[in-house]
Length: 158
Image 1 (cartoon, rainbow, N blue to C red):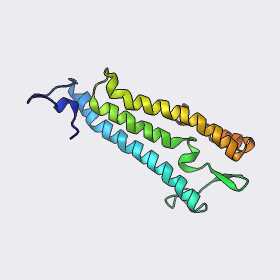
Image 2 (tube, rainbow, N blue to C red):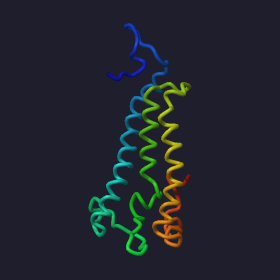
Image 3 (spheres, rainbow, N blue to C red):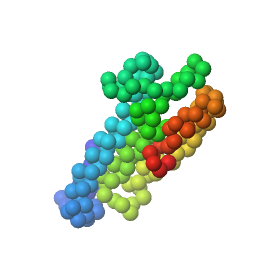
Image 4 (cartoon, rainbow, N blue to C red):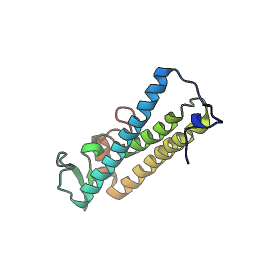
């Protein structure tokens, strides 16, 4: 059974000692961040699925699909896919960050391994995806999409 590292011991609590406010903030913030990440990742993937299956259907009945025609293919560029080209990766990053935060070991590299792995994986994967999409949709259409959706993963930052 998986347990919080602070609960492991012989009848006594071991682990990091945090001030009450920080401990409460992590107890509320880490699960909230996990849920936000889940919402972003799942929402983006569901929007893409809905668009591929029913290109003219509004996502959740609210978001009108906008796209760029690239021959017989379409590039979705509205809703979550209009915010960043790989916005679902941000949700996955929030998952991994929340898992690291829940342990409360800010100086222990082991608690951060999954987060570091995910960040490295998705930054390199995003770059490979961009090359693949440029080949798939054509350089002109991919450049048009990049001009329309400026950010790669994190809106306003990257």
